[in-house]
Length: 372
Image (tube, rainbow, N blue to C red; front, side, top):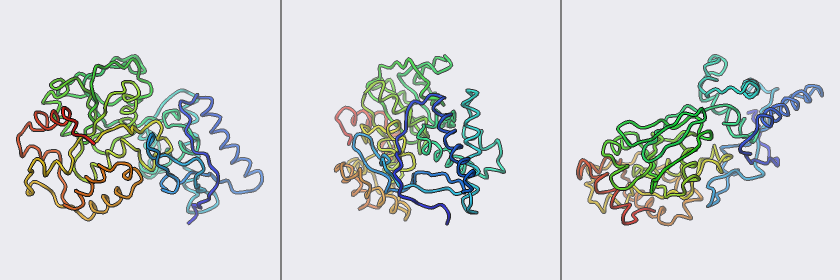
C-alpha cells in the first residue's frame, strides 16, 4: 500500500480567520514544492496529517478532541499507482480553490463533485480530499471558499443578519429556519434566550415546535443537526455559545448513536480534530434521554429496543474514549445502558402521554437540574 505513514514533526494548528492572500500563498507553496521536486527529477509527494489516527489525538477538557502539535503523517506519492490518483485529484481541487479565492467566488462540496462526476467518482472522495487539504494547509474550509450544504434547523428567540444583509428572525413557529451556509459571516446576533436545546432528531424538533416549547417554559433557542450534525450546525452551536454564554443542553435518544452525536457536539470528532477550537462546545450538558430515566419513569420494557451487535460495539468504543474518564456520571449512565442491553428513542415518552416530553419531562429536568 503506497500511502506511507511517517512520524514527521508536522504542526497541525488551524489559523482562523485567514485572509485571501494567505490562502493563495499556502497553495502556491504546495505547487512550488511540486515543481521543485520535478526540477530535481524526483517524484512529487504531498504530506498529510493522519486525521483518523487516534495516536494523533489528545483530549483536553476545555477543547475536546484536538490534533497533537507534532503528529504522524502520511505521504501521497505521485509515482505510486495506488496513490497517484489521489495526488492528481488533490492538485485538481487545489486549482479550483485557488481560482475561487482569486475571483472571490464560492462553491459547495456538492458543486465541486458535480463539476466532474466521472473524475471524482463519488461525493465522499471530494469530501475527504477537501478535509485533507484544509488540514494540510492549516486553513479552515470556509477560508478556502468551500461551503457545506446545510441540513440543520434553528428556531426560537434568535435574530441575526446574514453576510449579504438579509435579516433573519427565528421565531418559534411550525417551520424552522435553515442553519446559514456561512455561519462565520452572520452578525448582529440578538437573543433573550435563557438556554439552548440541541435536539438529535428532526421529528422531535418539529414536535417541540408544534407544542410551542420555545415560548411556554422560558425563551430558548432550539437547534437540530437532524442526526449526525454537519459542519454548519456545529459552527452555529459554537457561535451561539461564544455570543451568549448561556447553558446548552442536549436531548438525544438513549442509545449509543445518540450518545455519539452528543459527543460530536461537545468534544468533536477524530476526523475534524484539527478544527476542534472552532467546532466544539465542552460546556454542553446531557439533559436526556438518560438511560436511568427509563427506570425512573417506569417505561415498560416492551417499549424498549434490544441492542444489536453494532450497538454493543459502538457503546464499548465510546466507553473507552478519553473524555468518558472525566465524566463519572456519564460513565455510570453508559454502564446502565450496557447492563440492560436496551435502547430507547425519545418518542418512547409518548407511551406516558402524547405531550409528556414538552409538558412534563423537559420542564421538570430544566427546573430541578436533571442534567449531567
